[in-house]
Length: 421
Image (cartoon, rainbow, N blue to C red; front, side):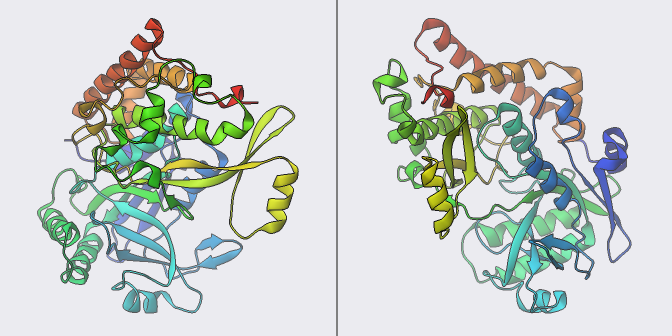
């Protein structure tokens, strides 16, 4: 697999897209926002996406200055090794105002629960983690308007700093069971040995994805309980496989939007996971709550938060309902691993999809034969030629599965919010 040449990428993508940092040992690091060229292919990024990209690429891991602004207050940043779940990563925290950065590093990094707000994670291609998958999910989800996926940017990190963090990861997890201590040990060896898909071509940096850490999410328990392949058998799957129009299951009324969005999010998840060969979706689906209401004939969405009675009253006056929207939070175990969605035939006999999702899928299949789009995947998202060929084949398979059903009349494109009045 090719290695990363950040300077070339920065020049190809435009100087404004790249931010540069200098480590404590004098190594130059770069962070690249990867949406500038994506917009040329019609990918729509929200204002919050672009803001998040800029915030991620403003994070200086080494400065002790108050550099990160949140709700009008500036914080210093601290980096610690990740100490829970399975994949090794560096976590970036906004340091609590009653601590200095040095205190945080000395007192908090060894704790699983830390006194600070976790802002981001830096992940490289190790264990069940793959940089192109993280970046691919971010951009493909916006291209398909599918699900909610955290923003990710391309970043390099001083290899000596990363090695020191990996050594701490090994130390702090030594007493733990499970995969995390093993994976920290493996990553440390890979960094020391200069593994190609992790280290920069000149050998002094690692490279990976710096990805936004979601806030306020809750586990989407509707999808769990039947093991790693349970998403093919649970209640949403059964509803999505029922024949006939969606109105045979429930009427197209505004009060049934929660059911509609649950089905749409579920089938959308199968589409994007089928394209990007997701191996580890089980346990990695969450949700956010939103208010939905109609205004001037249009559907309006507002983020829901607990404990705001005045907002609840205002929303009730508008006739709003509260519903869950799926968040696909951890997307690192894709592309380079087994495609559980297609292998488990999760799309087989699904009879309901969103018309918009289908049309965007068709558009993606076309883009995957566009040399400029392929070049963008290769350069900015770090897809190898093997990755590109795999995604091309997967997208074609997913499209043909759905399209054959549409043409035969077995599949209905009726998961459309605008139809629910």
